[in-house]
Each structure stands twice: as structure tokens, then as C-alpha cells.
Amino acid sequence: MEAQASAVPVIAAAAGGAPELVEHHETGLLVPPNDVAAFAAALAELAGSPELARLGERGRQRASLRTWRRSLLELREALAAALDEGSGEPSPAALIPASLRSA
Image (cartoon, rainbow, N blue to C red; front, side):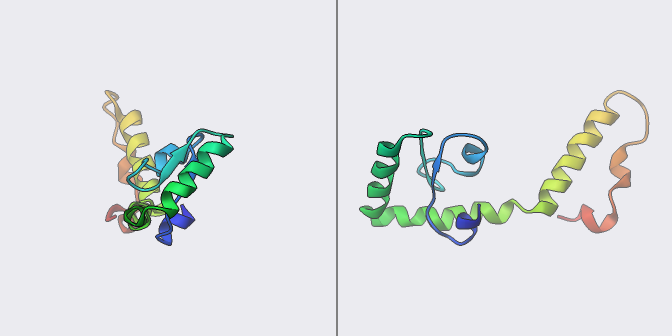
């Protein structure tokens, strides 16, 4: 994510959380985990294709949307919805400080 935020094209292993952050050929390149040949091929593809430089800017745009504040708000909204579902109780969303409500 740090590389994306710096507009650097990313090559990542398609494992763990990487596929959530890197969209293949849109915001970076994904390769199978532990596949050195695939990594080398992706590196060669990136180096040999000036148009793939756009991946860095698209990654930066996507990274700018993933802030801690936004993640906290999304988590709180999901928890509030889960807790309030059918209970008739006041929504825990009311506990969100006003300063955090405007993302």
C-alpha cells in the first residue's frame, strides 16, 4: 500500500490481503505466491511496457481511498448494522462521534 500511495507500480503475490489492494492490470500486477518465474515475467512486462506506468497512478488513487478513518467508519457501520438488525434497540451508530461521521 505504501508503494501504491507513492504512485509506484506494484507487483504482489496473489495471497493474503494483496488481492484486496491490488487489482491485476488495473492498480498493479499479481503473481502466484512463491513463483519466482512469474515474478520475473511480471517485472519484465512492467519494465517493457510504458503504458503499464499508469498502474502506479491508479494504485495511488486507490490507496488514497483506503484511510484509517474511512476503514474505521466502515467497520463501525457494519457493526452497527449487525447489532441493530431486528433488535428494536437504538443503533450503536449513534455512538460515532460527529467528527468521524463526515468522511
